Length: 157
Image: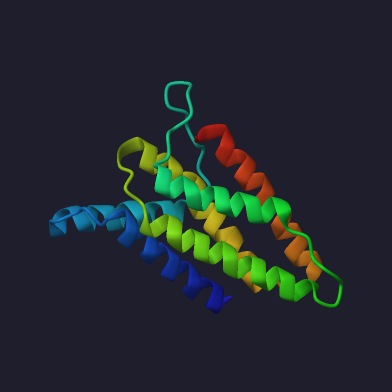
């Protein structure tokens, strides 16, 4: 579990760095760090629509999200003996896409905040996939990832 916690902290730092790339002053950087910490500590929050409409996600970020969606939806383990290797490879791909997503973050304001309400729990799921000990556990996480991506599509475009 410690490894999982350390990994979560690393991803949170990547989020902070990626989403904070245009911030110049120390005060703004501290506010952004506190903002991300609130998301990390608060768990799942209810995502709000933009006055009844979906939030628009920046195109470079959307590429990473669609890549994650594609690999999760198309995933199938090749055979029972290699299944955990397949899940580990899926985990590596998802982790890379999350890193790409966070490094391309240019969103601000409420759209940014609402995206984080989805993203932080999603990152937790990718970490659970990386830590899965058996195919049953990995399959359960895979189903949660599918549900999370479906939720993303309800609130973002």
